[in-house]
Length: 192
Figure 1: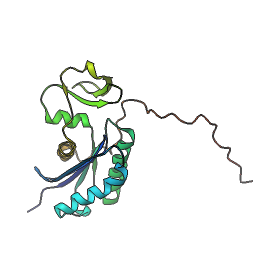
Figure 2: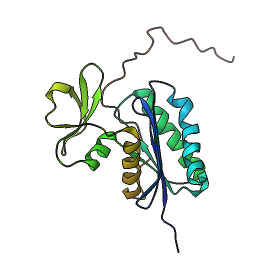
Figure 3: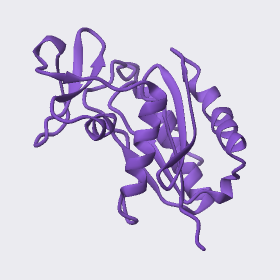
Figure 4: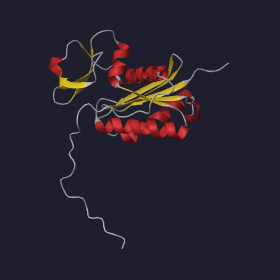
């Protein structure tokens, strides 16, 4: 008898570090920690803890799902880089799942909505690309579930994704707050 595939999904696109391990329809382990910073240092230990709790090794995994945003730029890069590195080293597919997709998967009707800084929100209607709008303009908003449930939804969506899904890439809806340095680049000297 062939066992059902094991899917590990994780997300650090907001002020959290969350992961879920799914086998078939069963969530084997789901963990989340709220944190404003430190996701880069906490993600891999959290993933090890999730796998250990389920008695699973990295080599047992069949697929990885990862939150691609929208959200915190640094947090998104942390998760996407980790997922792509793991997928390459384990030779398994990885699937990017937007937070807006995960919200839509858990609710009927309404507008998937991820709060953003400065009284803004990321939204996505059924037929449009994600956009950044004033939060007061959102009609019937559906907010993200708690981080552990969000990771579970991402795992379920990753399990349903086509085998040939493209590698995950960050979903940036707005430009970065940080600007490039205004100094001139250093002069590169010739070897001659």
